[in-house]
Structure formats: structure tokens, C-alpha cells
Image 1 (cartoon, rainbow, N blue to C red):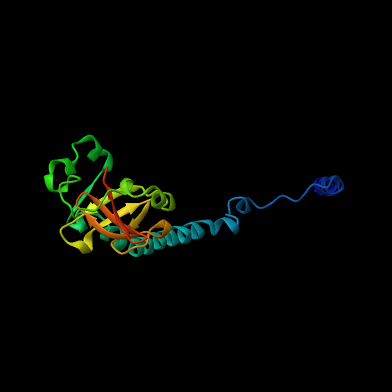
Image 2 (cartoon, helix red, strand yellow):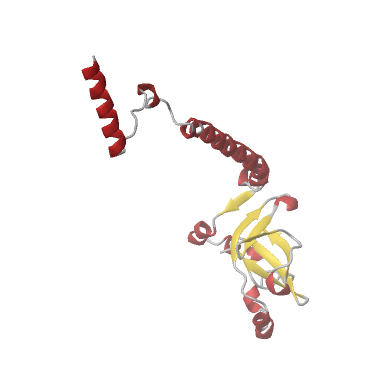
Length: 179
């Protein structure tokens, strides 16, 4: 038995001299590191935060989106590109043709050249008209506008008609027709 004991002592000394580490217990390799136990909790917390953020965002912006939707307006929202492809509504109504009604508002391009030079270009992007004036709106230069809003350059949106808008600039009224 001393022969075996001596062999174990030599083996232990050799291991110490070579710097070999002790053998780890077999169950230590099977245990999950402490850091890895927190990963599922962090993922669950992040998913819960994402769900709350989505819920709050929906409730903050949904009323505004639904309020501006065409179904809520009760009127009609038309695509200007689609309207350009069809016949012009103004030509089909004799009372709205230029020259037919002496009290009609002149078109924007018929204003004097000096007034047109002071007025910045205005582009009518979308037009939503309803029987109820409170539900009418237009999008001019990519901004939603309603009756009474100030436009770029000092013009004011005076009226939203079925076939365009009427603006007032320096005491003169002019009409921007839908295209």
C-alpha cells in the first residue's frame, strides 16, 4: 500500500510543479452561471416595456388618427391625381365658369403680377369638402389647414369650396382650384 501512496504523492507534486489546476467537481460544469439566470428576466422586462409603450402610443395617437380619417369626416376626400384624369367639375357647372358669375372670386393666376410676386407659391395637395363647414380641410404645402388659418407669406385661408379654396392676400381674394 505504501507503493500506491508514494505514487499518488509523486503525481501530486508533478501536478503542482506543472501548474495544473485541480479538477473541478462534475456538477460544477452542469450549473448555469449566475449571469445567465438573469437573461430571461431582462428579456421579459423589455417585452413588457415594449407592450406598454405600444399601448400608450396607440391611445395617445389613435383618437387624432381616427378624427382625421375620411370616414369620420362624413364628406368626401378626393385624390387630386384621380381628379386630374377625370373631367373638371368646374367646367360641368355653368355657374362656376369664369365670367359666368360677376361676383365670382378670380383665380390666383389672374391677380396682378406684383401681387403674385409677393405671394409665395401655394400648392394644394389634398382637398376634403363636406356639407358641414367644420369638417372641411385642405392640405396646402403638406400642412393640414382649416378655414381661418394663416398660410405662408401672409395669406389667409378664407373659404373651402367644393372645387377649391379661397385665400385672401393684401385685401384681395383669389381662388386656388383643385387639380
